[in-house]
Length: 310
Length: 310
Image 1 (spheres, each protein chain N blue to C red):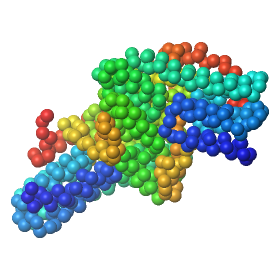
Image 2 (cartoon, chains in turn cyan, blue):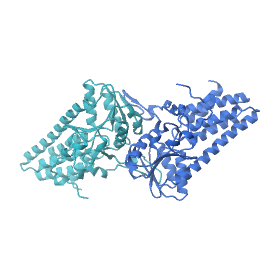
Image 3 (spheres, one colour):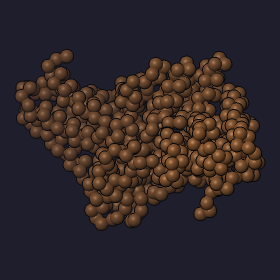
């Protein structure tokens, strides 16, 4: 491993090991990593910088293959870096790409929150699953706008990011009812609507934290509308959608010392067919299974980030 | 509290606090408690003994209101104790009632195991939920009879009795795939059949560890047959069926120190409508929703154990 590779691996490591953050949060962390590479002295000439950005982009996408915003951010920065120009111009182009992406994420959340507000019935109990900064922002925004409601949520084993969700909401003045994941079936009958975030979405479904499928099945059975809240930076074509299947965490996070003969499975993500969702709330409006295809852009993909054919 | 009440409360306490054992195991523990009362010198005359048995029966049924065998065992011992006779005869009648109940449980499991054998497809993956000594016996019996299969199971938060299940099965030579509860939706598509135990059953459903409903919904959606394995000592009339709703454990077992504004819910049991089950395998054959009513006996209930009208 070269010095540069080793340096980038160290920068990306916290993202690889992050089991508590949603996709949008990870994208903000990735912006900081790119900023570090742009500003530091390790890439004295432009070719070194371009090569560092390619290495970092690939490392980020591999670190969390389910997290679509890491792919879109990396893709945009690689296209910005490839433009001809002086060292200073290229760095400026890259910085602008980062700023655009960050601004897009912020504007996006605020547009999604506006629409989610209308989906939260006053005085009711709302279910939220796992941790998504978009879901947290939407719920806190509605509370700040004077809507009163309570939220039910669950642990999200094994990382317990559900506790992070509960803490953020309670700190924002929302009353929270918290239970373990398998008790979803007990609290959902009292809920009027359910929300979840999303790590990436395409045809035929949405990828999110494991447990989302059981939530979706229960919502369907109980007649509870279930919405995913996410910007179009989560949209991917189907060659990339199944990359999440390559992601498995150590079994010891679930059971430290299982007896002989017990194999511990610790997958983090699963696919939820679009037909189980009442809608996907994006900054461009509510997308349903019927009209998703038109949102899946024919995005040019930098050759460093193309998915290798099976 | 009298000396006798205090003594009985101490004997029953381990059953109250037991979050790892299934209903049949708890019944065996309750048999030991009754045996202690029958054999010891604290009840020198027959009226003292009868009164001790009433106090113990009520305490046992209250300790675990979802566990039907504790009710049936207590009911049978109270009827045995009420028969006229000398001190020695009454103690003998009671001991015989205990022996009959224990023998019934053992014979029952063996008859259920014979039927479950035919439901386990050779070479396939079988899902099992929570901990049930009946389910464990059936699976180990099938393995001992030379059937090869693997079992997938999950933690069963918050008490983690799924680890007990996995350990028993692995010790018996069955290969186990273990994951967290919300990952059921990920492993079930690879399973050919699912089994669960049962704490009590009546119309309109079966009461079992929380999480059973999500399992049932997923099995139905994925076309996987789901069987409950339990003897008719789990059958109760509907006035008793909903007693489980009175049972709630401390929230601190789920989250030790939640932040202000977060209420932790720790219910242990839930109702699974019979329509979600492919069948209930009892010592009398496979019972389905259509023919359950005829198994619900018009059992005489001792006045000490009658459910107070709402």
